[in-house]
Length: 335
Image (cartoon, rainbow, N blue to C red):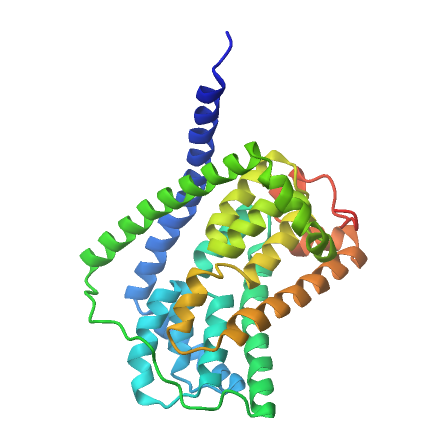
């Protein structure tokens, strides 16, 4: 029996949408509910106590530890709400907000996003160290740069402030349900667009345009769609596609690691970057310098992978499931 190509296209489309969304929901729903429970029990406050002294390293007041702790466990939206409450007690420069915003962009929503990376075969510890230490290092570098050059030292003016929001549990559940619905809509649109790109051979054009940069970073060109989606719209969406690709076996372990490392440091440049700009951050730090930092760190990871021994990589970086699935751990210069 010959299946109509149009019917086959939509059948494959629905299957792909279901596979990606179901995988993400298995991560997002239980993890988000657990984090919410921990937050209600004071988990965020306890974490902020640990982060408060560290904030002095990047030139920020200790109270910003609560902002970062909230963002680490939840998302940038919630962190922004806490910031607006805490910001009333301090006077910030544009440089301060750029440092804080850059750290929030690199390290946020870790319970969900680190779990996504774990399902792609990357050890949880590696992701947490990369994101948290990367945020601290980048924040410190920006602080030193701005202080040394005397740049962006003008007082920060908030271009926008939120209205009073309902923080009840019922309101949170409604908001969370709406977020899940939006995930379905966005993933459906993304996968449809990617399939159309493939039919029109636009995907091959994008691969051709990005392949020199991806090869330089040690990223397999097969991960081009994942890089584009993750960079523009977020790690959860790009990570969902990466998990799907990991299950096919087309990407090796080092492909997944380098791809997730780059996306961990530089993702969602549209939505998240716009949110941080609403705090008064400067675009130079939260976008261009962050991109340069992500490229440099990715190059260092690629170099390390090339020089590291096989067993060392297996133990430190990859989960056992990834070890079983992948057939190579050597980063090929010709990827």
